[in-house]
Amino acid sequence: MINIKENERLSMLNHSCAHLMAQAVKHLFPEAKFWVGPVIEEGFYYDIDLGDKVLTEEDIPKIEKEMKKLAKDGKRIVRHEISKQEALEMFHDDPYKIDLISRMNEEDTVISCYTQGDFTDLCRGPHVESVKELKHFKLLKFSGAYWKGDAKNKMLQRIYGICFENEEDLNKHLQELAEAQERDHRKIGKDLKIFMSHDLVGKGMPLWLPNGAIIRKELENYIYKKEQKLGYKHVYTPCVGTVDLYKTSGHWDHYQENMFPMMQVDDEEFVLRPMNCPHHMLIYANELHSYRDLPIRIGEFATDFRYEASGAVKGLERVRSMCQNDAHLFVRPDQIGEEFKKVVELILDVYKDFGIKDYKFRLSLRDPLDKEKYFDDDKMWNEAEAKLREVLNDLGVSYFEAIGEAAFYGPKLDVEVKPAVGPEITLSTCQLDFLLPRRFELSYIDNEGNKQTPVVLHRAIFGTFDRFTAFILEETKGSLPLWLSPIQVNIIPVNNEYHLEYCENLQQELSDYRTNLDSRNEKLSYKMRESVINKNPITVIIGQKEVDNKTVSYREYGSEDTKTVTLDEFKEMLSKRILNKD
Image (cartoon, rainbow, N blue to C red; front, side):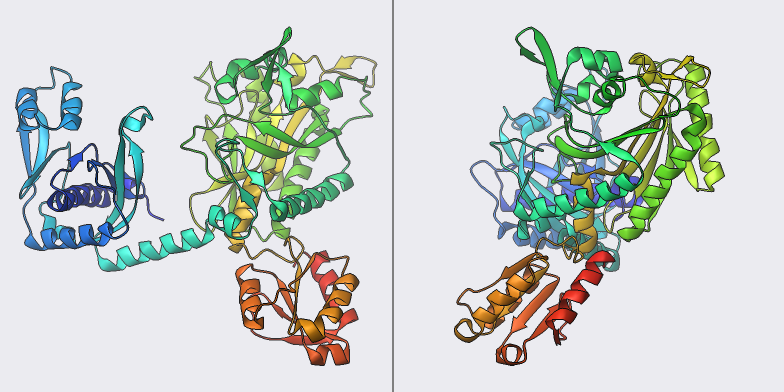
């Protein structure tokens, strides 16, 4: 979808339309007072104090109708420049405008405001010439918003809208919004009972429900088997670490603002871990290693905790508690290329299984001028960045470079994936690290009996199971492939009195699969419709013909065709599809 703020004409249209909306609100609710009405990526909004009036769904069409009436009237939009004193006098009865004006510097002697007909508001502009240019708009939603974003202040009412140059562009945008809403993993997650959240647990702390737990476990099993074949050894480590652990790794100095506050327990200071590499460094250091032992690949499905601003938290996509598909590869310098290549090949193999095709590789580099964010060792950085470029070029992988996007300890390869809706997201990552092995004094004995320092590759194929699940839900609209679906087969008897026993026996025969038997005393049409709503991949319908012939009749999600097969044929079909990840 288009970013309104990045398009000069659309930005001006939406800025002007915000004022048109405010004028319409003032006509309908004369007591209204206005805070700010900026242009945002998705259009515009205005924060409004309506006194005791609380907006309802019925108010939005009324505001739109008044906006259309004002636009048709065609008043010119006129800019005025006034002094700070004149502004204070003009808005003397409006505490919100007085607050804005009072905070302007004294030297800002000229303040701009815009007038259209009987409505005037402070604004820097620019605006269109006339309200008659504002014909193609839509008010999208409304919500509460604290004045200045401070929960200690009064709750205002915020109305969001969008404006375009013509009806065609507006309708196209509204269709894209409808598609995005249909794909929103938060809605899908609620409808399909995959995850929930609760204020008593906290923002950004999702609770995986039974259906979601099945999805996550299947993803874990899937990637575990692939990693196992590649020689990864999985471990379990604590969700906390001492402050000293993160001071040793360097995260305390470079990452502290993204960590939860320190906890004092007896004579130790702990933090919830934001990443797993320090723990894995200590596991490596637990025993001596020869050059013949390397590479050593340590994997973990690890729960981490990172502070995300409450406004950035979003379902499973941006969370404060997450489970990473994490691994650290301890390698000799001469093994970097081969191991990095294997990581890239694993990423591509996984993307093939999940049908992910729209992605690109980003080589994330440090900003050499930023000595605070990045560990200050030019030789180390130049060596690491050159090594990644060399490997990527040898692989023939197309990539672009991004300055200032590296981890504080080394450059990385990020995979930017374009979802069905919304901006690109980072799923997979692989980071090259010469620093942490030094900080933890890691070593191996080379072929001449000398101590050497290994290099570490940090990698996450799914990224986090949380974000990957959100991505898959939105890509599929919740219609998951058979192998990943919480319920693989939903069995419905046409009549419980005559067909339930056969269905119960059938469920036993299908014990190797995830089945549900819908034996409720509801109409067949109702249960069939609900099975579609729940997006069950296979719905089995058992009537008298199936009982008599000992067969199975089924429909696949999205199809009206009913197929009838023997039980053995049905099981063979299920097994083949699950094996092939269809």
